[in-house]
Amino acid sequence: MIKESIQRYLSGQACPALRLRAVLFDMDGVLFDSMPYHATAWAEVMNRHGLHFTRQEAFLHEGRTGASTINIAYNRQYGHDAPPELIEQIYAEKSAAFARFPEPRRMPGAAELLKKVQADGLTPVLVTGSGQRSLLDRLNHQYPGVFAPERMVTAFDVRHGKPDPEPYLMGLRKAGVAANEAIVVENAPIGVQAGHAAGIFTIAVNTGPLDGQVLLDAGADLLFPSMQALCDAWDNGLRPLLCPSKNGSQPLPGTIL
Ligand code: CA
Image: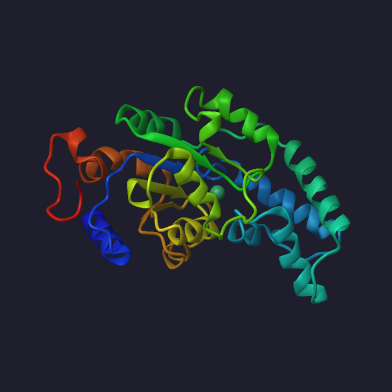
């Protein structure tokens, strides 16, 4: 299944080989189990302002910028975008509501996978739409020494958020690699769309309540039910195909070099 997925990706990109050098990680729902808090905070604050928005929708639209998320609900009710000052107010309240929750735990399997990625000589890069400084600061405490500041893309770096490919294209630039030298690890449909649109092999991890098919429909090349499952598969199937030289195995003819 993994081999076929890679071959399908390569023929779709008209690309001869995948030469893995960097792994681009999304943050919320991938490195931190923070999405349940985000979803509750979004629903609570939107409803407080008379906007209809459910927790499930928060998972569906996860990865969008705050303004884009607010405008989805606002447009549905009023037929036009929300005034900028209201967007600012709602986003500030949402950030405050999120900050009241306990510190999100590391996603099970994430730290172990990062260790494997680093041991394989690959560069980990963070690509998040988040502009929440509390979580960004926490990265250094929870994953010390993993993400160099110059290899992080956040809401402060890009003009267009996911599903636009810009964040992942910038991640490639910061890592100094081409699209066929990286993979993306994402949990949200919009993030998967962004990775796919950037021409990168995109692995989806379904860590939330959505149907996995939504992630495949968004363009995921591979789907795992959790970060732990991806971490386990790294040794059992992925590494030999993505990093054949690390495993002492031969690359797939015509595909992986
Ligand atoms: Ca995410």
